[in-house]
Each structure stands twice: as C-alpha cells, then as structure tokens.
Length: 254
Image (cartoon, rainbow, N blue to C red):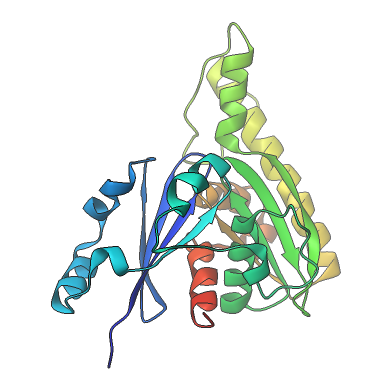
C-alpha cells in the first residue's frame, strides 16, 4: 500500500497547533510557539520521522494543510508550494456565514463526525467560542467572549493594582479574602455559569445533543463545569483534537 503523509497546521492567536496524518487518518498533534518556516521539521514526532525516512518521502513535498485565524501568519506560510489553505468553502456544513472562524467550523465538523449531530462545541482558546449545529448539519449559531486567560490579562494590563494570576487547577471558592483568589473566583465562576446557561438552553432545543469542549483551556473549563453542576458533569466531554479530526474528514475528500 502506498504511504501518504500530510501535515496540518492550525495557526491560533497564541500558538501553532500541528498534526500529522497517515493516509489521511489523524495520528497525533503537538503545539509550538510561532516559529520560522524552516524550523517546523525540528518538532516532528519520532514515529512520523521514521515513516517518512522509511518511505523515502521528500519533506518539502509533503502537503501542509493550513488553517489560520491570523492573516499576517497566513501570508508567511501560504507562499510555500506544499501549503494548501483550508477555507469555509471546504467545510461540508450548512448555513455557515462568511466571517465564521475556520477553526470553529473545523472543530464542529470534527465533533459532529465523531460524536454525532446535533453537536455543541465549546472552544476554550484565547477567544472562548460556543458553536452549535443541528441534526441536519446546519449551523444554529453561537457566541464569542474573551477566553479565561485573556480576561486575566486584561485586568492586569487595564488596572494599576490587580495582578496577573494563574488559572486554578480546580473550581475556586466563590467568596474570597485575597485579591488573586477573588480574580480567579470572579472570572472562573462567571464564565462557568454563563456557559452552563448556554448549555441548558441548547439542551432545551436538542435534548440528545453531545457537548464537547476543546482548546487550550478546554480541559480546565470542562473540570470547572463538571464541579459546578452535577447536571453538567454527565453532559460534557473533552477532546483536544476536534479541529484536526475535522481536517481528517476533509482530507479524505481532497
């Protein structure tokens, strides 16, 4: 059987997110800081490098499927001949609007293909997004708000006395006597309660829908939600690779 390898590169607001695919099937993912074009091969997983070497594949001929929400970064990568830009036109979902983030669309596609439709996806990235698709694969809609870390950073930058803090590993106490704890409580409880309200409304519309979290802070957020409500604990799951699972589905049709 002929061996084919593809790379996926999702450029987020804070980092590069990478994946590799063997015969269009997703294998694994990893993250890097923004780096120069000639350095991406330094971070390939060992099993990926081994297959490339055994199959005598040329690195500069392995396609890179690019997903980007940062136009300046898109420009840097798009001139490489092996780079293929994924756009909304490639996404087999209905009623997508022109300014919908390609990362949201792909993650929702991946979640729907794996967990079934209807589907609600909550992405805990730099921007925290909520995206819902119904049983007919039509976009119902969603919401966008600043992510957990962006809210923390905005308080630190926008005030004279409030410090930057680290996100707590577990749901923090609600009533606090110290400023860092109060910041954690205010942000985490407010965001968790707001998302919980979105989830309950979605469940009223689609009682049998799966709810999946993803993104850099998705796992933390899932833990907060599960701790905050026994009702939500049984309703949600976490999957860090939804976007690349969606890209894998598209690669099968390329």
